[in-house]
Length: 433
Image (tube, rainbow, N blue to C red; front, top):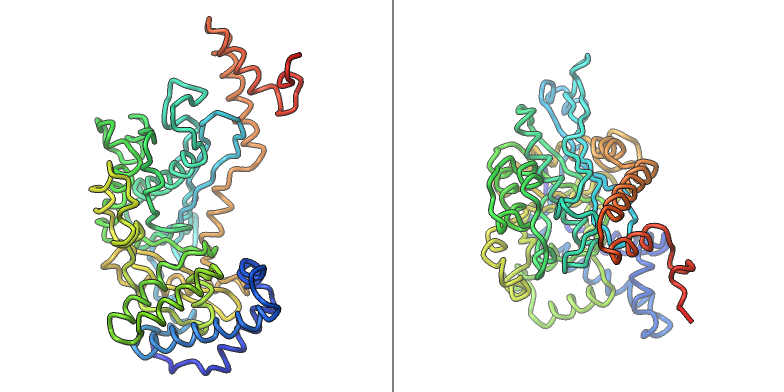
């Protein structure tokens, strides 16, 4: 691991020109093109180069960028006997208006490098739900909380976390576990008024603890309980994020530190932030211009729930729990020159060299791929195919109609028929004359 000198301006400029020509920044440019002059692309490239050089100069001069060598011939023999796990979840496309049934399965792929035989690798559906996690007595979700997409997102997140927990209990000897996606997710969106608690059976399945109160079965405290358990396991647990979500939380923390150390004045910092916001530039896009192959930024503890200036957005009911969420020790690693940096999140106190070496070497197993191949394997394994989603939806419709006709409530029967048998422009929806 050796620290590199500052990137020459010509190299940064060449990277920008290459990526602009490939269309990497097209969406960013189009966001502001309507209000700019004809030379918007040239102006954008100049400001982008200045910002990249500013960040590169600080990170390298402060010793924040390190390099990890790719040495498969040396690395993989040293991993013989260790056991690595990869986790990912899939959600079925159950397209039923007004319904909140969930078909989720979380797959696990476990492998022992260097071992031969039947026990070298193993696949398992670590956790699955074909149920309504929020109200087992209802087939049509009639709670006041109407954001069904948010209910499904929360269920997927907590199902993956619960699967990690149960995998440790069942498998035991896991040296490192990688999750596809963030390790710690922002929870404020799921604390809005009316967001329901999970059922007692679902909560027990997720955290292996019975008798939780209604409050403790809410997404936020239940998710916090599971994350704490994963953190206290002592093994490497990390999330690897491939797709650029557009966030700038990491760069914002770097800019804060530059101001604190007198490396950047407030006026220039404001200009840099305004430029990043105007063009919706993300951490990944900027660090892609700075990092060379095999380089990574030394991990930085990030509060995924938001800094002090964002705490006023936390739901009042859950402020205490949100304030207790662990920080995400975050870094960006560029496995090869042809791929964007991967965001890697883990718990504070984790040996980052061991983790990043695993991410680097599993990302280079396939040529021109640039992502841990174990996560690609489990993604294909856990994905819920469309035919399965259709079967689940059909079964749900049959069950709903059976219950609808068993009731004396004529309105419930009419609603069920309209919802399940008619499209938006069907004759049932035509206005009566």
